[in-house]
Amino acid sequence: MGVTGKIGFVGGGLMAEALIKGILQAKLISADRVMAADPSGERRDLLQARHGIRVFDDARLMVGECDILLLAVKPQVMGAVLASLATEINGGHLVISIAAGVTIAFIEKNLAGVGCRVIRVMPNTPAIVQEAASALSGGSLATAADMETAQGIFAAIGQSVVVDEAYLDAVTGLSGSGPAYVFSFIEALIDAGVKVGLARPVAQTLALQTVLGSVKLAMETGDHPAQLRAMVTSPGGTTIAGLHVLERAGMQGMIMDAVEAATERSRQLGAAGSKEDKN
Image (cartoon, rainbow, N blue to C red):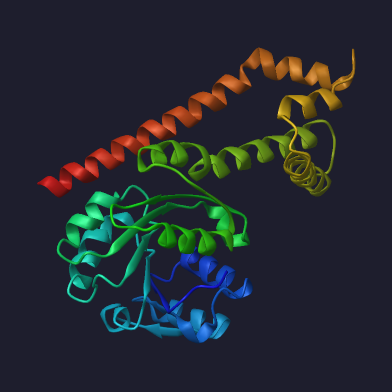
């Protein structure tokens, strides 16, 4: 399904570029209907050269030409950005935000009287290689058609799910912060290979391919991870010896604690943002 109308990105950083690349490669929309605004001349030149889209140094000059407005700015500047665009945005716009921690209520409040539809999305950094995990939540005026449009956009850079906004802190703790946990595990695998005598380039190749292959096996078979782990674990073999060490160290509990801690921190940051808004 294609994207109807024109889409404008407020902010032209890595996540915005990942989305631009994804929707163009998926042929959801043609480059002449995509535009981006960014204060950096270097980023504007790069986006125009790489993707053939129109670029603006001032988002206010772009908004009137767009049907979908995708807010890809840092959370701490969202208030100022919304204030500058409030007179340009109208009820015909679908506003999609990927700013972490910025609530739908905050966006709707700062666009009070505009009547635009708002969708909040939490993607993660693998969007850069078109393998994002994204969670979407719709605002009070967002329609089923709006959600379908947003899901189509984010499906172009990976997989997406729809959740109630109340669960976005948990999404942040799991998939938002999750790549860092995975990278730490990969780094540990590589160092472990070096410790037992492998050259670092060899250890890195084997570790990366092992993680990639394991993920593909889990996704393509649909089997529970416990079943797949059992397939590798022979009685009295090498794998059970290694797993015994991980179980004794409490690896699963540590991962659960990490996700819970990141979720709680996301809640704290969101509450702080709401408090600042009230002040």
